[in-house]
Length: 332
Image 1: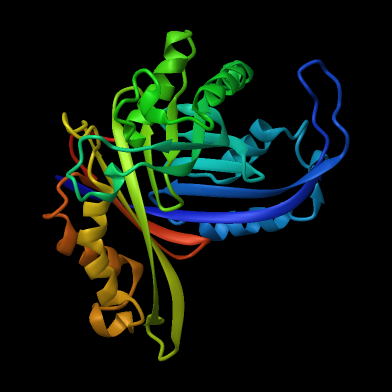
Image 2: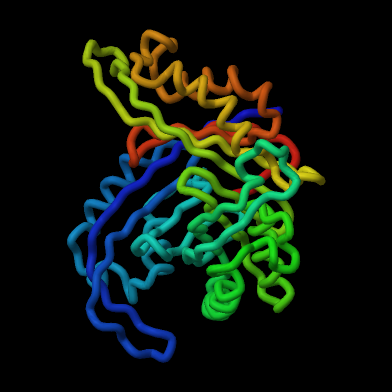
């Protein structure tokens, strides 16, 4: 197994624009709160910060020709000059955007929500997910730009099947784990001849599953509040850290999940407790994100062999991810 470190960064800007619709008609002047995320093998945050400052409070048409989402994304691609960028994602508000992936090109995406009940029939008797309960599920769908409108039309049909329903009663969802729900949605599109790159199901704000037609990937998020010391300085600072644990594999034949989210929590909660409300530079070698990832990897990887990613953000703008390459490999 090999390991690779990926730099994560995010920037925001507010801007106005006019774009041309499909029929050639110009939209009214309007604006968005934009967000740009990247994943790269080199640190691009200083570059991204400068670019976002350049666009902030601007009229995008003066800088970018017909600045629809794809054009704005292309502008960032051209400005962030690096052949080591794995992903650049543009958010035009919280519900839609476009993404460039080094191995897949440009995709468009949108996010939607439905409310539904379910239970997992094969879990042990005392497992809380075996009881009838519900979620406000959110779904994020990536698709080729050329078919995005068709995908949205079909999603409205899918939404009608899922919203305010008991998922177990739907054909193909007798065991509606979030993995099986993502799988069911992906294949609904496939049966109609529509290709979607991947379907993400957010079961809660901190847990979710992704299916891309071949592999499954799940994650669980944690947070902890800690202090640390700036390198080569005596100054003490603090952060609310975000941790995302990612796992990828085929599904368990009985439970039809990659891993029980509860088991991930059992393994990581004691580790988080050792870091929470503590001075990291006294527990770890330097208290840096790199040291934090190394320590967590050493503690958890043996107990969670399906773990393929571990990400730490010390601010909403800057993070670091460790990737553990093994099969099945989840390709972003």
